[in-house]
Structures are given as structure tokens and as C-alpha cells.
Image (cartoon, rainbow, N blue to C red):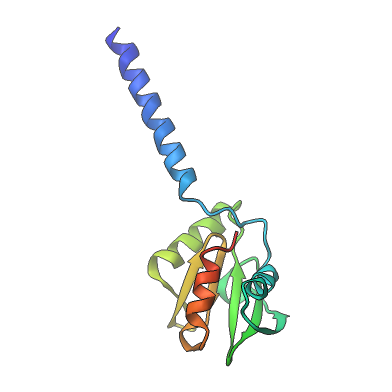
Length: 135
């Protein structure tokens, strides 16, 4: 009888942890970096040219540069279905920065996306508000 109760409690805890993890996951892995430019436009933010960029420097799966206000921002996607990509993005999010040739640069991470270059953009706060709803 005691054994059944222990197994029930363990099972209940596992279910709780599973659903707690699901609740904090942002489901935007199906989107592309270029979709963020369209989303910014829908949110009323004026967007200039959008161009693809190589994701290699950040070891992402894809990326684009979006002209917003006075400067470009880089939007990079990490494929959350890949454990390596998921872990890489989690480390970037935890640090709040990424590195280019050993120099740290602040970034914002939301769901499957990392946004680079916000610190010098005049529309930073509007972009961040939009990023937090991008799904």
C-alpha cells in the first residue's frame, strides 16, 4: 500500500514538472526571422529593408538584418527541435549576451529568436514590446 502511494506521488510530481516546463515555453519555432519584420510592421513600427544574413557567426540556423529607425537589428533563429541549438540559445539567454571575436554584445532572447543590436536603436523599447508578443 505504501509503495503505491510513493509511486503515485512520484508520478504526480513528474506530471507537474512536465506541465510547468510547457507553460514557460514560447511556441514560435515555426516562424522565420523575416516574419519578425512583418510582425513589427503589424505592430505599427516602421521597418526599412530586410536582408538575409549568414547565421554562422552565432551558430544559429537562420538570420536576417532589419532596418528599424536609425540602425539595423539582427534577428537570428535557433531551431528548438535540435538539442544543440536549444542548449546554445539557453546559454545565450542566461548570459544576456553573445560574443563576436571575443567581444561581448548584449542580446535579447525570446522563444527561438535572438535579437542583436538593440542597444543603439532609437526604437529599442517598441521592438522589445513587439518581441515579447512574437508568437
